[in-house]
Image (tube, rainbow, N blue to C red; front, side, top):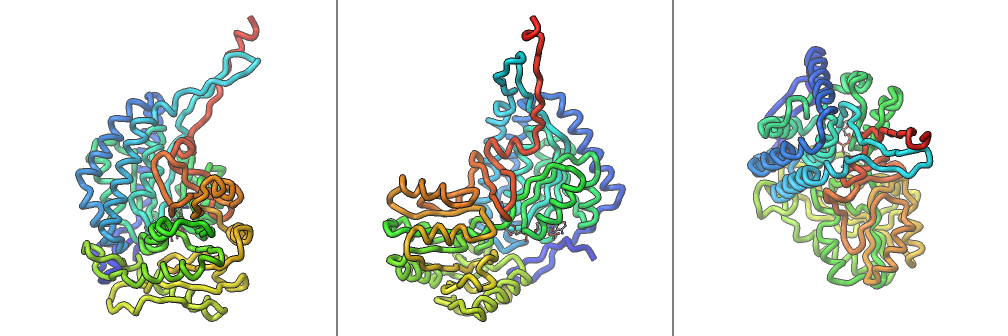
Length: 460
Ligand code: NAP
């Protein structure tokens, strides 16, 4: 039986199943995408701006429909799903307006002659994406590569096949050329086969360390350039001079947005001693009032997790943490529902020998650490295999910027929780992966920086 199924985690309803493609379908898809690359290679990127704007328009027209599908497949609050569609519209618009300029040739200073590099497409990119932001994760790769001229073959997560199908349909209906985004329900073996194909020239994966290492290995073996956007265990550092209102405001959803299933969610809240009790009280007061319910209902503030399996995994991890000395400062009362609800939990006293110390807990569990001072805070922040995002809460922003530079991470937000925007590069270091998506850096991920130098001027 195919692994690609749409299962509503709020009521267990299995509402769609999709089959893996046949060899013929894979071959035709690769061919179609490759032919489009060959055509796009000879066109100026500016010719695609209008098409990308039309795609943004298609998303706007279908905003509710797309948001609803994401809510049905992974239990995301409908309001958050709508924010996701809005963000994707902005990403498409950003690259439609700015992409062509960013792709202009870059002049170079050289004593050997008139030199510059062209920014050319490289070929079809395989995008292997996770379920937690079913639309945004794909659009982060699709929109910039659409402008570059690299068509996308999409292998989406097994639990969001209907969102993948809907997105591909809307992109096609908006007038995008055939082959610009092809959604295939590939098995792992088929994925490896596609990566090996010479028509694939890049591999972009967002997901866990497990998925990342296996796909990166296949890409590496076949000498395909890859970007890996992996998990995080982000520190959220509260300094002594943190503004009370800013702190409360930022904490309000730093760990519970998308039910805590965000790569850059503030998983480790590191607090200097003088503010520790206050942070615990604030978090508890925020968690106590969360209202579980149907994620399509606008009064619901606590969504189910994306699946029963994810809930069970988190239950085991929290139990393991407690078995090894962690204390539960607060846990939301048990939720009477058939949905995959996990009660928001605050854990303290997580020692370095605790098995969860260096693990990503992917759900509404805040791990709160008490430290003597900011030096210890930075040391603890860096004592992690991951390095994706981070936050610093302090009134002294100049000082916070200096501290930011000391954290081994891809991103730091001062006086805010994680952010993402079309113009800001997103990505990490260490086991959080490599490469960047979004911004100008993201646009350049699969570009051929083709050097041209005219030595005539030098010889004359
Ligand atoms: P995942 O299990 O690694 O899955 C991601 C994608 O990789 C899915 O399409 C999955 O397909 C595929 N995959 C997994 N193992 C594979 C293998 N051995 N061979 C081929 N394909 C494989 O990750 P997830 O659980 O969906 O997503 C949650 C993780 O993503 C968290 O760790 C989160 O922090 C991270 N994340 C990172 C970012 C970032 O930007 N850094 C953003 C969002 C999420 P199947 O679904 O079919 O298994």
